Amino acid sequence: MSGRGNRASGNCWERWAAWRPRPRIQLSMWRNSMTMSTACVRFATVALALSLGACAGESPPGDAADAKAAAKEAIWAKEQAVYAARRRADPQFYIDNASEQYVGWSPNWEAPEGLDLLRAGVSRVQGQVHEELTLKFEDIAVSGDAAVIYYSTHRTRLPTGEAVNQRFQIAHSWVREGDDWKLLGALGRAASPPYDEEQARAEIWAKEQAIFAGRAEGDIQYYVDNASEQYLGWPPGWSVPSGIEELRAGVAQMRGMDQEELTLELDGISFDGNTAISFFSTHRTRMPDGEAVDQRYENIHVWVYGNGQWRLLSSMGRPVT
Image (cartoon, rainbow, N blue to C red; front, side, top):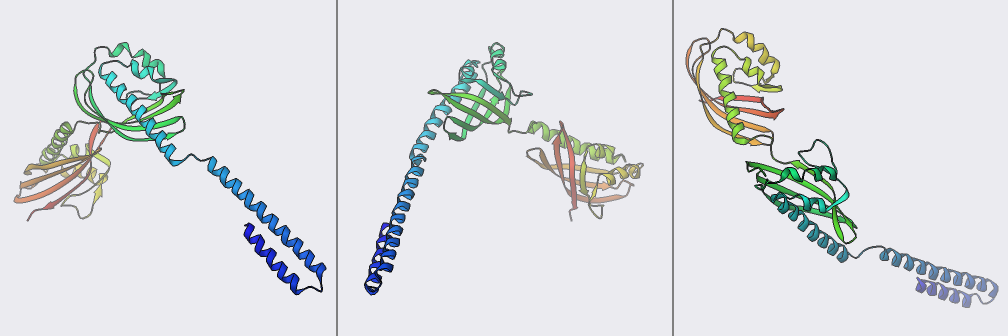
């Protein structure tokens, strides 16, 4: 910036040489030029000071990365030690490493609770030393004296010894008090479906068979009772997909049509969260009105789990030729 002021001053001198008969005007311009040069120098000085001040307020990236790595090492070691102590039925390590302002919300608690509930539970877990679980670090965020760590757990045995298959996702908030990290907040959520998959597979297949057993007797009430209110199906006999009202209307229409004969064969059931898809084949040899036939179908049913029950959400079938 000061160089630019010199160039401006030089131009003024050239003009002075050309305008010698008018020295008063040249003197005024020279003064203006010097004023511009001084202003430019001052501006450059202020800009440099602001730049240095901004840099002084920022932590070097290397320092932030080192601080995060150190926090992760210390906190993750404490997390693993908490669960190691828990497997020995010793929650005292958890309590000793929690802040006095601690509030947590375990998946088994109805509401957030403080240290008093943890302390009250020390005697209740004595002798429950059979828990088996693994931990997996997910991520950590660190800002000054605060940190939030995320990890997941997979429990295969309860403290009482019962075999389970439970997965959880955990978020713990830590604060640095002096030179030590203390647990301030805890939140966990179940990451596994609230049902046993093998039991659910057996339950769904039993429902499928009961639907067709009722249908063979001219009774589709069981079908209706086990369908979701949002049901939408497209069986081979329907011209368009229809909802639960169409099913309800069929209850009266099917009465007395009790001569159907068919067999079912399960092809597979798959699960994803609270949804299950059932694939099965049917072979019908007699229609509900008694007519002999030889008809084969491939079927898909979509089931959803809610409020402790599996309900039929969708159905579709196609003839096999």
